[in-house]
Image (cartoon, rainbow, N blue to C red):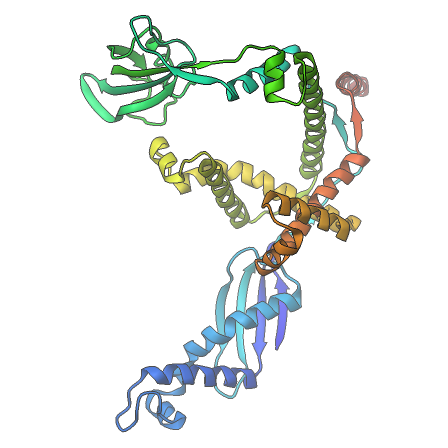
Amino acid sequence: MKAEWEKKSSNHGILTVEVDEERLNRALDQAFHKVVKKVTVPGFRKGKVPRIIFESRFGVESLYQEAVDLLLPEAYDEAVKSTGIVPVDRPEIDVEQLEKGKPFIFKATVTVKPDVELGEYVGVTVEKKEFPVTDKDVENELLARRERVATIETLEGPDASVENGDITRIDFEGFLNGEPFEGGKGENHELTIGSGAFIPGFEEKLIGMKPGEEKEITVTFPESYHSEELAGKEAVFKVKIREIRRKNLPELDDEFAKDVSEFETLEEFKADIREKLLKRAKESEEDALKDQVVEKVTAQAKIDLPEVMIREEAHHMVHEFEDTLRAQGLTLDLYFQYTGLNEEAMMDQYMESAEKRVRSSLVLEAIAEKEGIEPTEEEMNREIDELAKLYRTTREELMPQLEKFGSLPVIRNRLRIRKTVDWLLEKAHVVEKEKSEEKESSGENEAEENIR
């Protein structure tokens, strides 16, 4: 087989493939054995028609489409490997020659991974951002721990009334100009007061209501509300409180520390929380530096990015979001019903972020290739061990699955990108915010002097 790649632009080209006649004949033989089972010829049992009779009656051309379907995919894959191109979309196929006794020739118009023209990427200047840990942060973490072990009681009696933070069950129905509107009705709906789950003003107006009480409240939908029919409109909701539940938080003392941690005193527990928050802040600081490095080296590179790559990434981002919803017990269909979106509209919203992702990924791959950055086998093994822990299995049990589904190259590339970002940060000039501002000011003054 012969394959020739003719580049037309940075991300398009023509792949010409010539398959020898012997291989075409084998494909025609396979096609005949498949097609003959479906035809009926008087005097012959189905599937037993001789080849010469079949071709005289139906013509060899009747086997061409089946032969192409058998031959073309594997011939295309072989041609892609032999030429070293990296397609990013399905090819457009044009059959140039298909005759018995002659080579099979086809041309594929292919969109490929684009060339990357790198700019400066060694020694870029990035600004260190601080992520301070305050007493308030420690208090918030303690509150979160208290809420996890809080008990919940149902409030009853004449003194029971809704307060901020209460978990309520309500019936509601909304009206515009006295008429109910679609999606404005719910029964036995759970609503935490202060969560912001409903439109602004709704939850606050439930405060003070008692179990069994009914009330009409008036609210205005935001101008930016997803439904054009409701955006900016004033609505009246009939609301009934079915149930009020309240969290009882444990006392913040040594006993609480003993119950939720390995520490004997509250002060020891607070110190541990602060230490963990400081570690998290340090990680956030490094992540922010990495983000800046990637953003800067990407901005200095030139890429003619195919739209198909951006749309594919946007599609991937939608399904990442779907996984997040699923972890919360929700579905994408339910989200679409609530927001009025569909998958195409959601992909459109992700297009800008998807373009940034694809662009930065291509730049980092190009830098890794230029600098010879590759993960070691030890690093690969560590990464697979981490995955095994995540899936509660062992590396030995996980490996066959990773090999079966072709996941190892994906893991290797992910590590390669991660190492490249680390390498870029090592080479970068990290400056404090004040120094960065002084540098910018100095640059402006120098520019003014040059103008003068």
